[in-house]
Image (cartoon, rainbow, N blue to C red; front, side, top):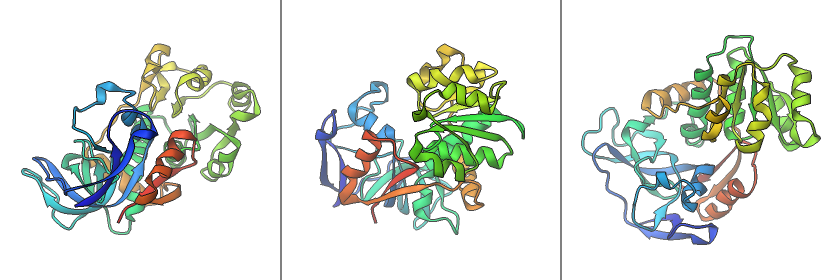
Length: 307
């Protein structure tokens, strides 16, 4: 038996609970891992609240929260290639295992070995935020010297987008609250404090003729405020707001496969991507970890240390 944290029905934080469960058995194409570190993401509370019912897999309750983790392979399901028992790995629990738990199953096709020299803590932040940053900038395909605006630059995804953009020779500006300024400027960002007033005016002072690309991590009204700053509306890439198509932009095309995970890990190992981890919680403090993401806008990434 192992401890897990999840929810017994759909709803708000009041439905969350700790519970014990047997180690799950990996099915075809799955790996069972001992979880060392789990990443915390906004999608976790979205799934708990059933805000996107199309993503409901129909699994029985209680369900474990979390969708990304790093750990050690304990067992292999049928048909798994390229991974072995004992491998340190990181990846996605796309088949419904959940990652806020002592053990879980990951989808083998969406799991990769952690390269030597990269910590499990860093690896656990890469499946969601790291690959999203890579995908968004690959989709834009901007040449060195082009300008890009990162809307919501201080979060886990936004900071990695800024780092990667700077590494590709792009000129990076970003919006965020005043508390995010130091982290953003350390990533080479020309910072625009949205709490100070006129975001559009401040952006046009920096780049009068508009941006070659925009990566939005916020959505909603904030997205619609900055979208007109793009020279071409098709170069507005939204990470989480699918309604971006209505203003001529595009949702990020996600690639969750092992190859993209391995590529992202190499970027982290080479120092091109350096996830900013601002809070590490033990599993016993998982409620506070998720609350920090659900109720606020934490800088960087929040993770749960499980092992």
